[in-house]
Length: 111
Image (cartoon, rainbow, N blue to C red; front, side, top):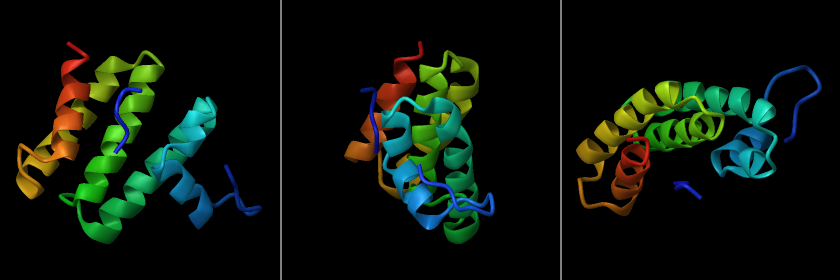
């Protein structure tokens, strides 16, 4: 889970490696934010379909996408993603889990 602080397939689809890099924050870390956002949204959609909308992997994707949105001065779009991630993690991992605390701090930093 990333706190405050690419590879494309030739047919236009996102490769598994791209999704892994995206989930780990690699594309965002290279400051290629325009490329990172569609990859992060794709990773979120895949994880929602694969694991269900209440899975911690979905919360991770939401948090990472919210971080990117915050970094591109789109705090209004980031807030609901942080809130949803926090709700998922509080329910699945508990309020005291480190990932839950990270998302809570990220959300609070918007205020």
